[in-house]
Image 1: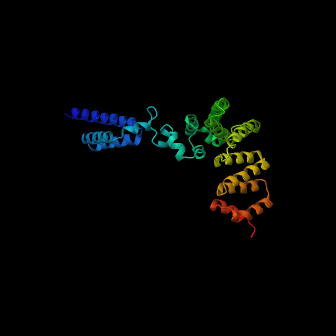
Image 2: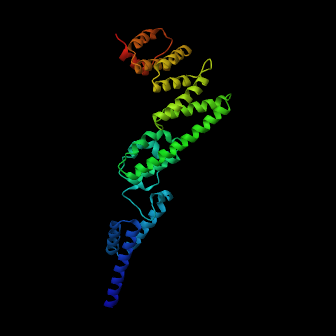
Image 3: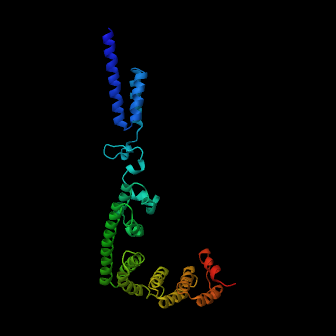
Length: 300
């Protein structure tokens, strides 16, 4: 009789050990395994039923989408934020890329960089990508270089496509607008070095002249041309376009801002003083974005 009891006890202990081992493997936690063993020993038979019921109930309540937290067969419960595949639509809006590159996980940094290949407008992340070239993780730096090269290829293809459409359809205003927008976007980025950018300044001037030949061109195109001239430091031409802007849109605050910026960039204090003295005579309503400059430069 005692032999049978001893055998049952040994079998029960082995069963408890096996059950605890299975719980450890399933949840990836040796604490869970020890807890299961203690419950099974402390509450013979009832412990097994209790743990089985808890496990069953937890499985029933588990959201099906929890599978996203797994990578292969491993569950890294201490690093949940790194386990899911990077979602650029969510992550790029919520976490600035500059901060993402500072996260400890190198794998996370690399994933975020490579996800940019799927972005429609990768150009907006160019500055961050260029910073990533100096990242302490060499793989992240390599990935950033790869993305920049791919971005340059896409940009070059878009430039060629837009230019061909514009040249082949000179009377179609839509193609001129697209070509101007593309060139302006590229010139405002640092994707090309100074030598290559000069070639596009010439192309931009041509299409801009075309669009600004209208009697009343849109303000946006006047602003674009003036800012491109600022980049070229061609302040003489910029003054001509600023004057035209003020003449065509006397009630535009942006026209006033362009003129003020011209005087700041060209360091023309005399012109600034003379212009500010005439502001009260202009039919324009000024807001804080302009008044802050006036307070600084106006001599009381």
